[in-house]
Image (cartoon, rainbow over all chains, first blue to last red; front, top):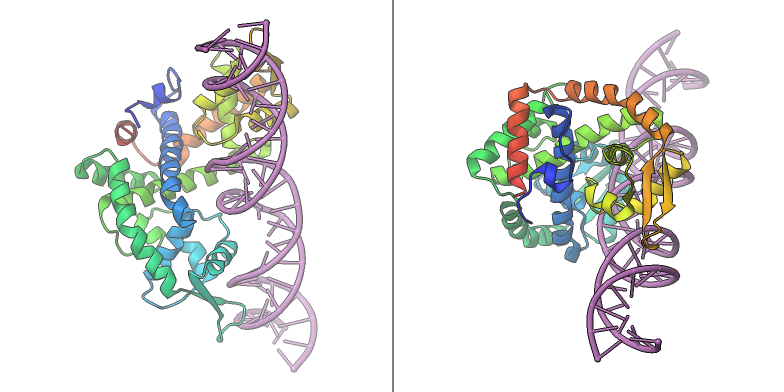
Length: 152
Length: 152
DNA sequence: TGTTTTTAAATGTATATACATTAAATTCAC
DNA sequence: GTGAATTTAATGTATATACATTTAAAAACA
């Protein structure tokens, strides 16, 4: 994990302009992050997005969410919430109940086992995030502001 | 593409700390970018990473690169350069020649057709990058600095 | 020289992503 | 109320990702 400017990391001499560099920089930084995260989650047989869905469900404090509400809250809007929930159910980390008010919908909630796995992981994930992000808190805050603005 | 802070976009009230928010913010922003890029590249039957590999090869000014050198320069270090090159070859955008000095290696270079597709796309991609990044040039530069530092 | 180790690329496999399509239930229009 | 339109999940399919394994060639070394 040695320090490298993007240009050295991907051996590209220069970019057309800073906007084009930024797109590449975001793609590259994402890969850096996800590769690291995968190795953290692997022993628990979870993907980063599966972990995220567990966090979403726990944030409901017991209230279930439908599959489409989960989709809305997921980080990757194109991923398939239905199949992801199926995977989590197989691991007994969530439960699925047909919604009585609208039988098209399915109420999904986290199980006790899901909560256990989550709390076991949480501290590790947090420490890990601090570890892989080589920035001061002020820089992190500024990065958050800029990313929110970027998508505006 | 309306402006939304991360918290509203994924309907999460708060984060444990700014580092944890940043990880989520990077994942979410990446998805925003890639979803947009996919729609741009789709009519050309290219994925963003395939486009990137074409750019890498063109940057060589005719000199070929081996598959593993391409892998090194790719944005996602875990993707499979061998199969990606195979896809590009099928589309006749690159050519593969067994390296005479070392028969394990394969020299890959961009074809005339590949160069044509690339120059056709280039202006569009650049305009598109400016369009989806809602930041001033000063902000973009700062974001680039922070991302490079993040991975340090 | 012959054997072992290392390297480069290809291949295998499970899962994830990016859609399009389908099936069932509900809502809307009339 | 009936039929059309819409919504929700699930399913189908092609490709991409994240590895592990294999195959072949080259390098290292005894």
